[in-house]
Each structure stands twice: as structure tokens, then as C-alpha cells.
Image (cartoon, rainbow over all chains, first blue to last red; front, side):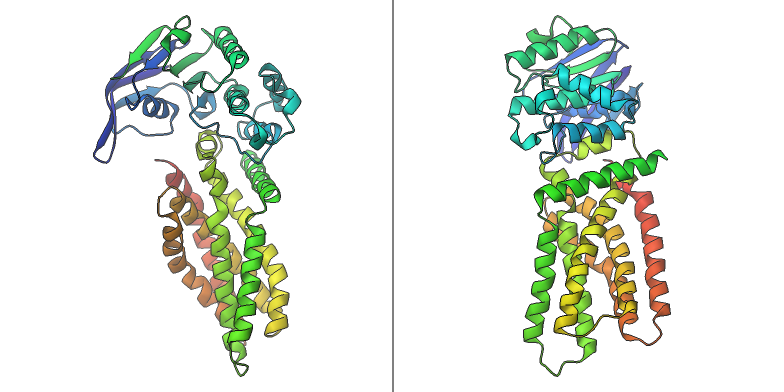
Length: 194
Length: 212
């Protein structure tokens, strides 16, 4: 699904990623670890198609419609409700029967009862859950998740882990984390950035 | 027609955001009316209608600039651009939807401001209204394009006027010309040509603006 050779990225003089090799088969689960500033987010953004590498080769066997990306920001509008945000993405991703799909993901992440409330009124954990709903809405083949457990409470972590367990093997995962032990049961590969 | 469905969904989102936040249209309206009031009292009473026409177009361009400066604020402040860029829709749909929303705000502000202009200075004829509509189309097409370029930079408040105002000069020439000459057809055609040409360029090039 993802093949990277000597992948690198520089912002002007600053080199944030150097010589990364990655081989991730379809259905695989790669965990990206490393200290702050090691380039985890940059690597994930490159693999998701949001940033172009400056060095090396990258082949991702998935088009934009098949990628689900969770970054540090939830990528939702705070002045819109959860339902309005997901409707927008549902239309842009041309999801068949998107209303049912939205209902399903909102139920799954415990946001159905607050679907008509503006995201601005959500707690950080609820916003992260909504971001996960957005990521899973179009049932992507490749999930690129940048520290997905961030801000989630115990119930949210459990919901996420249940999702990861359900989708493991069926979907391909590239996940960055500061806590490798949490995703260790799912991992099939590890990329350690220095 | 998936493309137009995407444009409709994105335009609806922009209109909904303005309806909730109300931070663009009221600012544009207050600004344009304030400009008319200030000039009403600062221009000598013997000033010609020609000077008032010039003032009208200056007010329109700077009011538009105010709206364009706000156009991508939700995407920048809430960092939603990544989400829109990742969606499998044609990226030019983002530009078209944002242009339509900005046009709607500008047209609404002008619909309320032109009667104020008529009250303070002189009546506005059909030719001027046609010129304003054509100018709005060009302003929104070009302004949204350069607004997207400026929004990712640190000096965005400076960069937007620096990029936009030189590109708006032909619009000013066409607009003022159509408002003051007896046979405005040439100027209206010029504005129409500007709109078509720049809309086409912006539509085709927007992909490169939002792709690193």
C-alpha cells in the first residue's frame, strides 16, 4: 500500500525528515514513533498527500478518496454542528447513503445526542471523537492517524481501540504515537524516527 | 454533475458560517456606508458628479477587499484547509464556492449601500448597476484566488492588498468608464472580458495554489 525509499523533507534550510524507508502492505499496521520534532507528523502528512517530499521516492496505492487522515487539528468548522460538518464531508466524498453512514459513526462515537450542537461547544475530547467520525465516514482503505488517542477520555480511548481492533487487517494503518505500548497489540511494523 | 454538487455544498457551508458568525457582511456594510458619510461631509459641495462616481468605485473596491480578507479566515483559524484539500472533489470547487459566497456578501452590501450613495451624492442608473455587477464578478474571482495565496503567509494582511489592488485596476478603469461615458458598451464589454479571462485563469490555476 505504501512504499517509501530514502524519503526526506526540508523546509528551506531546516531538514525535518531524512532517509526514511517504509514498506507497508495492504492490511498492515505501521506504528511511527520518535521524540518531538523527529518528523512523525511530516511523514504522515506526506503519506496522506498533504505535503510533497523533497527527497526520495514515495508510492501510495490509494487515491484521495481512499485516505482517511487524522491530524493534530480536527479539520471541522467550530461554528457548524457535528451533523453539518459530517454532511459537508459526506457530500464532498460522495458517500452513497451518507445520512445513514453519518448516523452510524455518530452513534458509534457517542455523539448522536449532541449532533445538533455547534462544535464550538464541544470539549476537546468530543471534538477529537468528531474528528474520528470524519476520518471513518467514507470508510477509507488507508488510515493515517497522527496521535489518535490525544485528548480522548477513557471511554473515547476504548471506543477508538475497539475500532482499531475491528478494522485491523481489513484496512491499512499508519499511526504515530508517543505511547507505542497502546497500539502494540495491533502493530505489524514499526518506524522509529530519530 | 458532481462538480456543481460540490460547489453547492461548499457555498452552503460558507453562507451558513456567515449566518452564524456574522463577521463579514456587517463589517462590509458599515465600512461602505461610513465611507459615503465621511466623503459626503469632506467633499466640497461644488464637487462634480464625476468625483462622486470615482468615490463610488473606490468604496466598492475597498469594501470588497474587506470581505476578501475575511474569506478564508474560518479555514485558517480552524485549520480546515487540509480537510477540504484532502477531499476527492476538484479543488477548483473550493475557489468557485468561495467566490460565489463573497459575491453574495458584496452584492448584499452594495444593495444597501447604493441607495445611501444616491441619498448623499446622485442617483445610480442601470448602466452603473450593470457595471457594478460585472465588476463584482471580477473582484470576487481574482480576489478569492489571491486571498487563498495570501492566507497561508504570515504577512497575509499586507500581501492581499498588494496582490489584489494592481489586479483590480482594470476593473476600476472599466467601472468608472462605464459610469461616466455616454456610450458605456465598450467598458461593459471590457469588464465582461476581464471577468471571463481571469475566472478561467483562476479556475485552472487554483489547484496549484492549494497544493504544496
